[in-house]
Image (cartoon, rainbow, N blue to C red; front, side, top):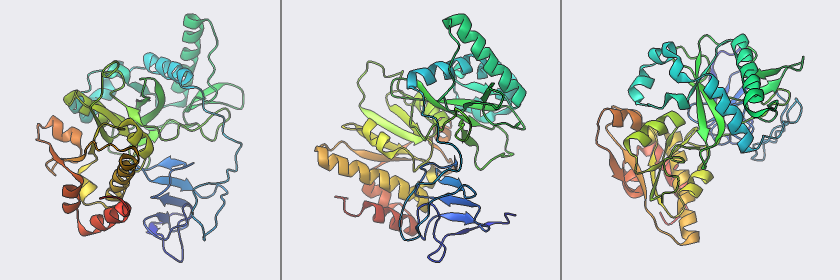
Length: 375
């Protein structure tokens, strides 16, 4: 039985990355929390750590660093093309829009305060297996009626096939409440994956967000950890001068509303999608708006510094010098969305100013990541 967790050590390194620091594990070693790797993770924490269940057989060599695991279940179904995923997810949201779920919206002060007006772009994820099964049947009926074809769910994360051949959506158990379905858009505005979020303070998993995945199910697969492009549709056909990255799709939607001149993207955790962020901001200004704890949380500071280091190396290689700035605000507000809603003034720091503002532990983490760069 799990009675707590503890940090990894040299005598007992992380079972995922093989390192003796930063990561954690439960006392019985059944669950690993890896700060370095999210590859093939069973889940992600709200901070972007990879969560791995160790009762699945894994390859582990304490003398090496790795992030691969051997799965005891069948090989994952290849993910479907983005156009197909978009069609299925779009119908899912159209048939179960958040705008028609007044009870769910009214429960969430966060949704009302975030000023997300386009509720039709988000969905309600039913809490019961029966309701989700009916929703899948509605998608099938709608596709046959509108397109004249029976839809294929194979390779669409979140959908899978039961033992009786019927199509399923989400987990095979009931939640305690209906959830919010949050789409993650690609650079062309197509829905590439979805997250689900609980509204109440009674958490039903580690963190409030969970990827809509069917990784261990027949015909199912994982969505990975894609980057959400909130500005994809708003900037269609327009030139992009500044890319702003923040944490999560919902937060990105709020920031885009208040800062319409920025192309806003949202990652699923501070350590996820760094290369896609750098690619999106290539030869453009980059503004980083992670939560306020990027000054005091060593893990967040490390991830932010790693992103800056990657950006700096690319700038040196491609010979461009567009600025990278870290956004800060009144520390009473955790996220940039809360600060914008409250009308708080934003401040923009260059990398050297950010480094000077860090706690000693955070500075040491950041310095290690930036070693070898011009910074």
